[in-house]
Figure 1 (cartoon, one colour):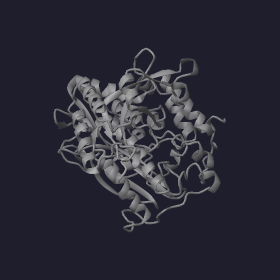
Figure 2: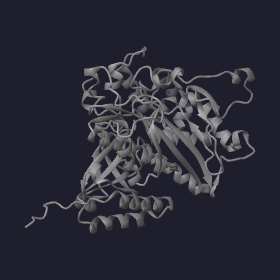
Figure 3: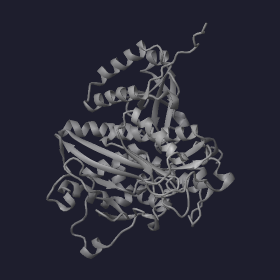
Figure 4: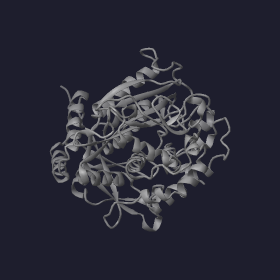
Length: 480
């Protein structure tokens, strides 16, 4: 006689997961009423007895994803009063004003693959609210969401974004945290661009990891080994900007977890190894109104419309001010090395991969601009919000400027100190983020820089790995 299992937690096959998550994504794209979605999700949680916990996510100022698992029954009773200690999160509140509140965004709801996240769990994103119930200034997800809603309410403008996120796969779990012991990372593959043998460690990881975003409704496009040894890239389809930013956070999380399950490390350090290409998060962006791609013009230069070229001009004009947001870590400035296809030239080009902005070949549907100077450790909500607003509202080139001066190639800062100085002195950044957030972000970046040698030199230094904001070492941070 068989004894029934003691636990019966929800586990959904991948194919069914994809259908369920795509239906939720479509409801989000259809802008279904938040109250209607909330009622539907809470009813589902009440009725589905096999769910034990709800993982509620938020993102801090630097872009680190935080997750709290709430018992389902508790969450159903207390979902309007979920508080946490903001003083424990770098860049959030001070100790004397520590209580912050989570406001669940029921539209951003995901069913999870049980073999990666554990059975009996679902996940939902949230905004961070202040004690008075207003959106918390350091929560860039709230800021991005508010701006997209404002744009749509004004004239139905929608921003579409598709990121290309590169990462490295290294042997051993927690390779970044153990870097101080070995002083190196160990490749799992020395194959090249688009090349790895079927069944090798890199290909097995890519095949396994790619199944997860597909099941979560990302809309996979292609996956492949990248130029550098042990480097990978898995692309998913463009979507509305807030959905894409959430997916960036989930993508990096699931890659790390799948790698850990295979006794390896997925690393999104911008430049973990000297002498080879680094990791980027190329950000493809376009605007749509009434079903029309505003960046498409078959008669325009490189088939990009005037609106598209105006967006490019504004981004390039404000490139120095934006640089710290796009490249927020000490290690990120190693990637801006012209010897390795570094996109450090403040210019636009259809073909030059050293240009900050590329104009990819497109058509009526896919015409876009690609901002290449974005590191994968950047806060996606902050990056997309800043690029969106700059593309639409930033100051453009001064047409009265001397033509020979305008024609000179300018370069992005090559170190975090210069980038921080330009960021702190920027009036546009003050307008974009608010004085308080601008000051907080600059202070955090200065603290990170001060833990590392001022002169980068040629060799990767231990502190730039050890104190990288995406590495789970907050205990170490507190020792300084």
